[in-house]
Structures are given as structure tokens and as C-alpha cells.
Amino acid sequence: MPRLIPVQFATLAARLKPAWPAVQHFGRGLLNFALPARCLHCDDDLPPATEIAFCLKCIQAIAPELGECCRRCGAVLPEHFVPAEDCPACKEFSLKFDAVYPLGRYEGALREVVLKTKRLSSEAFSVSIGRLLAQRLGEKLAGFHANAVMPVPMHWAKRFFRGVNSPELLAQCVARKLHLPVVQNMVRCRYTGAQKDLLPRERFRNVQDAFRLRRADRQRWQGSRLLVVDDILTTGATCSEVARLLKQAGAAAVAVAVVARADGS
Image 1 (spheres, rainbow, N blue to C red):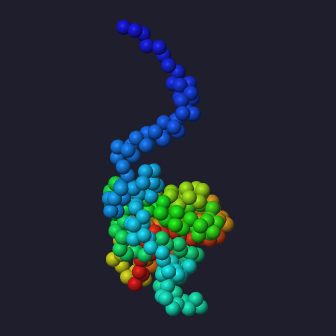
Image 2 (image 1 turned 90 degrees about the vertical axis):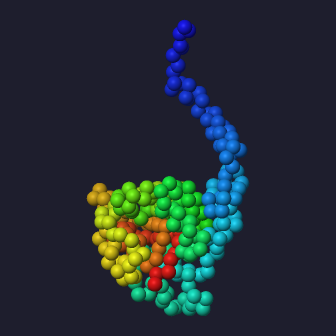
């Protein structure tokens, strides 16, 4: 039986490293040929090497162009709204964040996609809608001049039963587009249950003291500008509580990037 010649794997890996991108490109091409990409929403064929797994028709249905939005809460404003007036969606609430950047309204195709991101093994939906959020709002988000991106924290029990953390995947897509770090210096320390079953003012009480900053990070963001990312914003109670803690720790400004802006009534 022939004797095996020992191989220095580190040396071999170093020699193959320059060729690795070409190998990856070939592998992706072979995979696309064998299993062509399909739209996650309508199952139509997609062009090869597409980053957002939705066809153009579905993208237009998922995120049509919004009208004028309230900069403070992200609500789509009435047609004849006078800028000097208070926004009807947020005038009754003391929101702690400074701005909201929504991709679309929580209705129709966007609502269907957001609900799918909350299911087990739905990473593909979260990543694709996150990339669409980053692509569509990239210029506006860059104008906020954030220092870091932070997903709204999810309670460990909800993460365990849901099997996916959609805000975390969304935040990674936005951060990659803006070339910013993703930070998770806050935890959800109390299970609050579903906000959707509560009246607007009850939602603010429900999330009060539901979060806390990690002890080592309490002074980390002194004077910084933070971009918080979530999937749905309705009254803004959850994101407002997150922003309150960040500003209490010294943050100069907090903005929210959100996939869907829902009616807060």
C-alpha cells in the first residue's frame, strides 16, 4: 500500500487563497444554473446573481413610492396637510426618537412579507426586505450621519419560539449599506407580549422599563448618533422606549429605520 505524503495544509491553503474568489464565482454560477433564483413573493424567475429576491413587479407592490411622511413618526401625511400643523398620528405622544424612515405602509404585499419574516426559517425574506430597505432609503439614512446601527432587542423567549430575529437581520443589511457597525448593547429584560392587542396608550405602559443597557456599555455612546432598526412601527412606543434609554446614556440623536409604518389608531 503506497505511503501517503504528508501535506502542509496551511501552505496549501495559502497557495489556493488567490484563486478562491474565482472558485466561489464558478460555484455560484453552477448553482444558479442548476437552481435558478425565484421571487420569494410570486415564485417567478429572477435574473442570476440578484441580491434582492423579489422581482421588479413584486418590489413595486411591496414598496410603492410613499407620499410625504411625518419626519418625526414616519406616518404618511394627508394630502392637504399644512406643515405648521401637528401630525395627527403623533401629536398626542411624547416620542423620544428624532426621526423615522419607513420603507412603506403596513398593508397589502408589504404586510404579507413582514408577517413571513416572523416565521421559522424565514431568513431569506428578512434579508431581502432588509436589502430593499437599505437600497431604497440608503441616501436618507446616510444623511442622518449615524455612528452605529442597533436592532430593537428581542426577548430571549420570543427568539427561542420564533427561531428568527428579523430586526437583527434587517440591521445587518442596513449597516452593511452604510458601512457602519451593528451594536447590541441593550437587552429586552422583560417579556411584554404582543403590542398589537393593546390600545395606543397601553402600548407605552406595556414597554416601560422593558429594556436595559448592558452595564459595561452605559457610557459607550456619549454624544453619538444611533440608528435603530425594526420591522414594524405603529405608535412608536417600543422604539421610543429604546431611544429614551440611549439618550439617557448620552446619545445625541436617535433615528429609526423601519420596514413598515402601521396605522397607530
